[in-house]
Image (tube, rainbow, N blue to C red; front, side):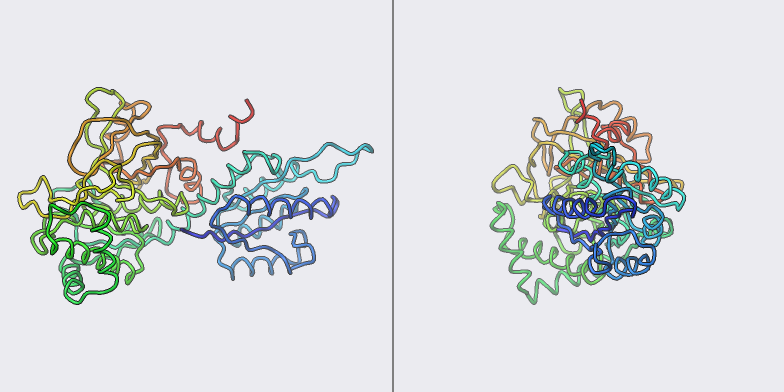
Length: 478
C-alpha cells in the first residue's frame, strides 16, 4: 500500500465564530480519519493554540512544517469564511495538489447573525488561487456526513497518490523493444523533459547473469519464490529446473528494480531471452505485478507508465494487468478479448490453480507462461500514450462477460460502444496495449491530470461531463 502525506490546514477568519471553526476542525478531521485510507495527516497543532490557519505572521512556519514533512497534498477546509490570501500563498509555496472545501452553513440564528459563511469564503479563495496560478480540486459545499464529501475526498487522495507516483517515476528498461514492434516506440528525452520520468536501461545479458547467479547460489527470496509457484500453480507441464529458473528470473528482476530504484519494469520478453536462458518471463512478470512492481511486455515504456498510474489510483491496493486488446467477441457487438501470453497476476485467476505452461506460439515453446481466465466484474481500462509531443491517457470502463476459451491469460469484456472505442484507439495516439484493473479509477485518473502539465485525460466512457457531474455529486441530488 502507499501512504499519502496530507497537509491539513483548516482555516478561519477573525470576524466569524472561532468556536464554530474549532468545532468543525475537529469534526472534519474525525470524518476523514474514519474513511480508513492509507494516509498520514500533518496538521498545524503547536503552531498556534487553535491549530487553525488565520494569522499571516505564521505563514512561513506552516510552509516549513509542510515542506519538512514532505507532504504529498494539502487540504484547506474552510471552517468559517477562511483567510484566502494565506491559503493561496501556502498552496503556491508547497506546489502539491490542493483540496478546497468547506462544510455547508447552518441557518442564521434567531437574531439574524451568521456564524461561519464558509461557502462565501470558498468563492473568494477559489479566485485567489487562480490569481496565484494554483491548480486545485473542489468538492461541492455540503455537510460533513454527505456522501459527496466522502466521494470527493477519497478521489482526491487517490489522485494525489497518482501524482506522487508519476512525478517520482523511474522505469527499469530491460533491453530494447523487439524490432517488429514499432508501435511501442517512445521518446525517452521527451518523457524526461516533459514529465521528469526517468528510464534506466540494462541489457538482457545483465539480466541473464543476475538470474543464473541467483539460481546457482540460492537465497531465501529464491526459496520463497519456488514455494509460491508450486503452491499457487499447476506446474505439471514443466520441470523442477524450469520452476527454479523462472523463480530465479523473478528474484533477479526484483533485485535489479530495487537497486536502480525503479518502480516499474518494461522487458523485451521475446525472443532473445528464450535463446539465452530458455524460459519465458510471463509468470515472473505476473508475480512481480502482483507485488506492485508492474512489468510490461515488449519493452512498452508507455504501458509501464500507465500501470504505475492505474495501481496508484487505488492507493496501491490492487494489481493491474497488462493486456492486448485483441479480437471482437463472436456474438456480442460490444465485446472484446483482453489477452496476453501469460502475464496476468496469479491473484486474479478464476481457477484455484492456473496452469504454468510452455509458450504456445513460438517454435521453441519455452516454459514460463501463466495461462487461464481471470475474474470478470467491473474494470477500468487505460492507456497513457503520445506522439508529436502531445500526451493523453485513454480511460474507459468495462465489465467481464462470458466468451470462448483461448490460450494465454485472458478475459472477455463488454464496453458501452465498441465502434467508438475502436475508432479512438486506432486513430490514436494509442495502440493495442492497455492496462486493466478491477476498480473504477477513472475519476481519480481524470483528476490527477489536473496536476500533470502536458497530460490530457481522454475518457470514452464515462464522458468528461459525466465524470465532472459525478464528482459534483449531481447524481445524489436527484
